[in-house]
Amino acid sequence: MSTKDFLEKDYYKVLGVPKDATEAEIKKAYRKLAREFHPDANKGNARAEERFKEISEAHDVLGDPKKRKEYDEARALFGNGGFRPGPGAGGSFNFDLSDLFGGAQGGFGGGLGDVFGGLFGRGAGTRTQPRRGQDIESEVTLSFTEAIEGATVPLRMSSQQPCKACSGTGDKNGTPRVCPTCVGTGQVARGSGGGFSLTDPCHDCKGRGLIAENPCEVCRGSGRAKSSRTMQVRIPAGVRDGQRIRLRGKGAPGERGGPAGDLYVVVHVDEHPVFGRKGDNLTVTVPVTFAEAALGGEVRVPTLGGPPVTLKLPPGTPNGRTMRARGKGAVRKDGTRGDLLVTVEVSVPKNLSGKAREALEAYREATAGEDPRAELFEAAKGA
Image (tube, rainbow, N blue to C red; front, side, top):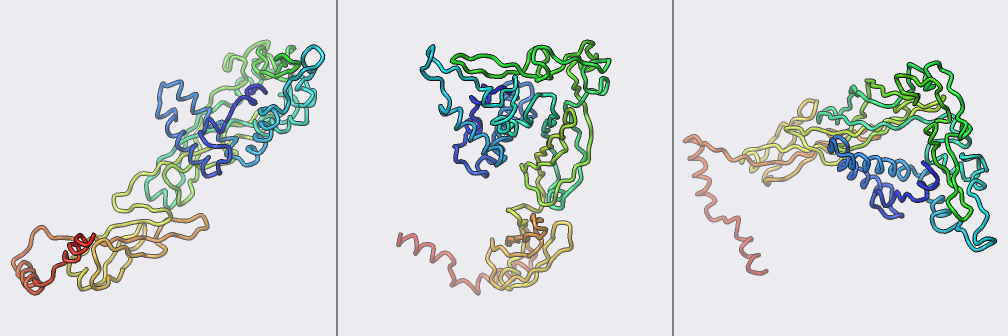
């Protein structure tokens, strides 16, 4: 990314959040936009793919407290008029931004170069320095039980990696030469008026700092080739639907000895036919008979992946009451478990035997003087 691009990009605007947004607000905005513009949900839509890249780039900076601080400081220094050309000899200052970045040709030789280097994964100096690999994002769909208990799943990923045919040099003979235009920096300086100088990737070497005299037929001189690999990824217990997991160092390999990027896995969780989830607690609805609800008793309740538990039902339990089975819920970050919330649902039989009907008729006669709706009408009159 050129200095000009960096100064003009507003990552807060990309995510649609204010500059004082909290980490949680930034995370929520990113997830919403990432779902909307993810390439898998917008196949063939080039604009959506470009938007997704912008969103990911913005989150990579604002989602990291250190990078966000550096970004805010750099924007405050340059984006808010900290160094604007003013009247002077010839109508402008004889001022070059390269002085601020250490004076290196087309590179960030020091000073504020450390700020930009921290933001975009490159150190000070020329592009021949080690370069961090790209981050990769993937998705995985788990069953409800796998999400609660954790699972190891295979992920097939595609990324740009050093070309094996030319060992990442871009030259089929393995002997590329230093680009004479940028002198190996990968960047060239250009004037923008008023004595300012900005940097752009070198067009001749496409930012690599090297030129292949005999371009590799596999990577066409780029030194990078698309590669697919399958790896086993451990998804921790207790993950939620839509959660984004970061696996450090599992992304694309770095260049020239640089560290690998990170792998981000977005988790999707299938629904369960019996259990639901509420935070760290699981939920289940258990049908009971009218007699059990009225007279009380013991009720066996299923658990997820474990033996059933028995709960005591107090006499006079109303329909919809929720009871708690402690320690039978989802796994928390500290290793403890949430609870199982059991909601009682009084079951009304569709077919009655003669004996059951006689018993209910007798019960209706015994309670004929009671009107469960009397308070309802009284309250309606007084309102």
